[in-house]
Image 1: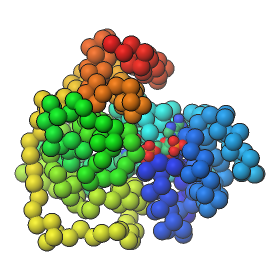
Image 2: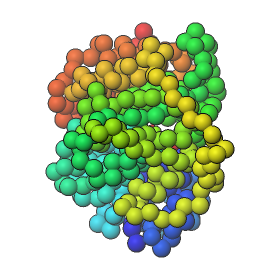
Image 3: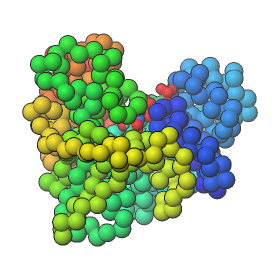
Length: 381
Ligand code: NDP
Ligand code: MG
């Protein structure tokens, strides 16, 4: 029986992780869960899964929740997430919070030698060098939950790193894949939240529309698989049937295919190296799909992807700035304070203004993150 700590239990990935746990009660049990402020969503989950520890974002939420939950300790903030992640009985930490808030708990969980199932790409984008260094030092494996990285992980299947020619990450194109840049000027939050293939949290759906999601995934792949940026390619693949591929030096290309259902990569991360039955809603029907399409990515049409490659190649603190500027700008867009195209402007300005720090430690990363967010939010340029 694997004991799970689930960070981000009320989110899109969190709820689907709980679906997987429900399917296999003999295999998994929920030890702890963390969420932000959404008590309404959390309460039925707490009743059903009876976690031993609950973590919420702040004291106010703790107070409101305490009236409904008796006997279960409630902790708060990053410190609470750390405690829930390093508890002795915990085997696996699923990091499915939104944003780089998941970084400190991930580092501590690695130090405590917990297996990490990582959905939270912002953690690797903001501090991949620290996370991977800790993982190597403590001999801890990070199992990807992001569908593209799960596909790459499955396509690598223990092959030698030196035999990789390139990683090919597929992109569905997001909500605006058929719009020109001119047509993006007046798009609304509602338009942007309307993703053609996947149902996800708000922030990642906006990231998909701006193509920053793919940029973050390129950086995530760089860290997870230790492959240089020149060997990571992105290709537009509207059907989201091939979740990503690995091309080897002999020209062989391995791919992982499936219907767009996040429960597949979530469960794989939890059961690896084994597989368990998963009654997915719709089986992949290749005869029905008939054709798969691929297009070259246009870096002018999608400047966020270009900026992510540039920040990744520049390295050091540049990806921390990229991530923090993006998180804050997306939040401003969701609040209706800036336009969709302002997101990329704010990121570009933040990157231009920043003087790169070569090998930032955790406290430097946290302060650059905070400074960048403040600049994006309060200097409305
Ligand atoms: P959601 O916005 O749906 O969920 C985010 C979760 O994090 C919620 O449980 C939220 O709680 C919690 N949370 C937010 N802020 C805090 C905080 N300060 N402290 C504790 N918990 C907090 O996001 P997604 O599930 O879509 O995405 C989660 C991560 O997984 C992201 O990094 C995303 O990029 C990645 N990912 C998501 C995919 C998807 O299909 N959704 C696919 C691949 C990767 P509350 O509900 O209370 O706000
Ligand atoms: Mg993805």
